[in-house]
Amino acid sequence: MAQKASNTATGTPGDFPPFNQRHLLSIADLQQHEIIDLLDRAERMVPVSRQERKIHATLTGKTQINLFFEPSTRTQGSFEIAGKRLGALVMNMSVKSSSVSKGETLVDTATTLNAMRPDVIVVRHAAAGAVELLSQKVGCAVINAGDGAHEHPTQALLDALTIRRNKGRISGLTVAICGDIGNSRVVRSNLLLLGALNVRTRVIAPRNLLPAGIEHLATEVFTDMREGLKDVDVVMMLRLQHERANGRMIPSVREYYHFYGLDAEKLAFARPNAIVMHPGPMNRGVEIDPAIADGNRSVITEQVEMGVAVRMAVLDALLPAGDKA
Ligand code: CP
Image 1: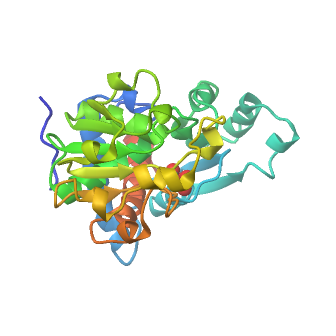
Image 2: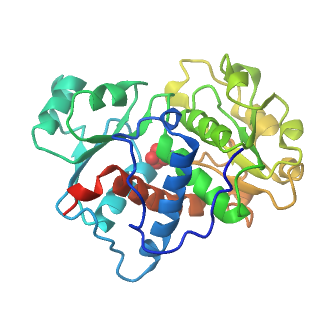
């Protein structure tokens, strides 16, 4: 049985037992109690970002390097803000102007950065497994900020926190994830996390965007959006991942929107109080009607806010208390 996720975490943000993981590479590495622990820690970080002086300086004297080999707005920005609100020295490594552009390998980059004695490296890379490889070459904590189509663990955590805050619980809900399932790291992390918390998960996509074996991760698989959305509590939309598609994409954007774009008519199949989510970046008019994205059932900007809280919680949890300044 899933533990009932608490929505009433109180006390100081730092009042938690030690978190027994060195890195955060994958949701698959986490036990149910560790997921709930991170959500509870993040819940307590939310007020820090809402107060006038946005500082909870548990990482003073620590060094955080953000190493992003792929573009990012939300993840990189929120990791930078999270680190700074915790008092860490944060360095954003510009990959374009680094020696990677001169042919330096990932391992040499990792070894070089490791020599600067960071306490944590946050990595996004286009190749699945690259972040885990890097974690084996450095002497500090490593956080996966998205590796190819493999995983994006902090996205799944912030999505779960957003669901819990809006619904008061997670276990027992039905969540539909719609769109480019085959190329998405967000869906993989979400299905692992939601499955661990006993959520009923549905994926909805055209057949050519459904990966082999998806039925082992999701509770139900649909190719018809209206059937898939029937009576769900949460609708999570995904963008078409053109950069990872390898030509395996839809023939017409207009046709895709007709069958799989979330508009008011399709959303009416979900529960009347269903919330609408999107990890971003959104392609308005492709997977989602702008009126729905900006409408009163959308929690998309709240997801971004929870991203800061979750990343503060993860940074704080991974850096051992006895080691903090
Ligand atoms: N959701 C997400 O990972 O967005 P970014 O690519 O902007 O970081």
